[in-house]
Length: 289
Image 1 (spheres, one colour):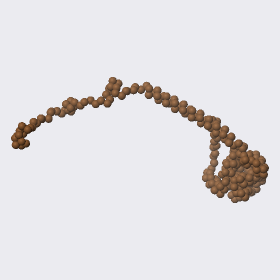
Image 2 (cartoon, helix red, strand yellow; image 1 turned 30 degrees about the vertical axis):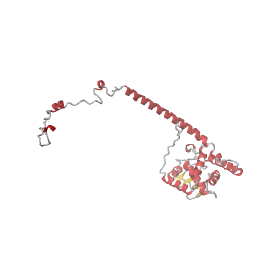
Image 3 (spheres, rainbow, N blue to C red; image 1 turned 90 degrees about the horizontal axis):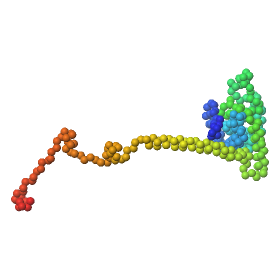
Image 4 (cartoon, rainbow, N blue to C red; image 1 turned 180 degrees about the vertical axis):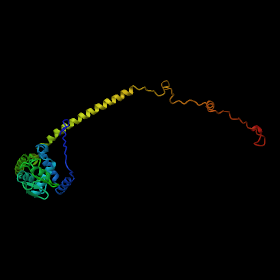
């Protein structure tokens, strides 16, 4: 599926528990440190040619990953690196006879497809009863190391196109290796993948700008509504006694008698005491005070 506005693609996959498959993939990547780099190149080569869409008969990421592992196990290169493994991947799968043999990774073996078909017992019974047609003989048979009843190549009806492409890339790489004139030996494989992704990124960027513009418009409209709502409210100026009825910042003098009368108490002035005249002999002459 593809979103028509952003160009982003999505897939809905209904599958069983994949924890065993993920563990096996992690183990292979630990065993072959160059595996992830090699997978990136091969997967890109499939992508730009439309060979990785399972819906159209191509090969998904898991199948491509296991195809690479199978080529390393069955056709190892002395260099034991990504470059050597890439050359042998093209040779192994470009020239493999898919009509007669199937491939097993664990254990590493090639087997006769006719006598050792990879499928569940339920599927085999349906074929025997005529309810389901068997796969065409040219289909690739690759046994899943995580499930011996799962053939990861059973949906790849484009296997003939894949093999023809791999053979052509193999011939081109041999020529390039002999001449050694190319600045990049993998360019024939991945092509102008940057421009392909650049167009997709531009579509996504344009969609993002449109979403952002709509969001800004909504925010501006909301801010305008808030300002208009505040403008309709009455505003009180600080210190405006007529509008608020309250004198702000001025304290009214307290009348003690009125306050006491309201509280029911009485007030009286404290008695004034006149000091007695000093007599002579206390502090000298009385005229001194």
